[in-house]
Length: 77
Image (cartoon, rainbow, N blue to C red; front, side, top):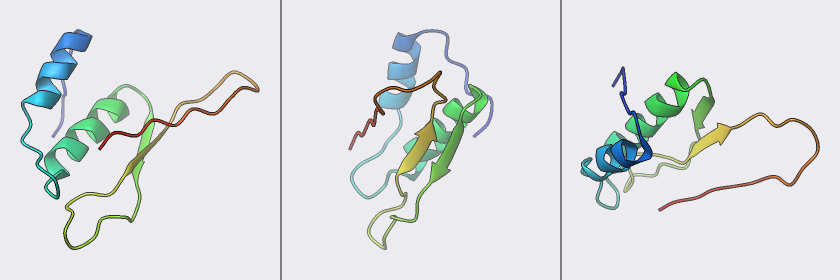
């Protein structure tokens, strides 16, 4: 997927909600999120946690900081 076009947070929510992604079949949503963050200038990596019953691993996205602070981790399943 290339050229993700999202103008507002609402558009992003709708785009994500329209992607079929039942448990174990998250490949399409992982690809969408990977493309979205990459085109936003961030680096997204998929870890190796995908198993035979899951089509995608976890996406790890690093957001550069501006000094010392509290690390933030977000997770959604």
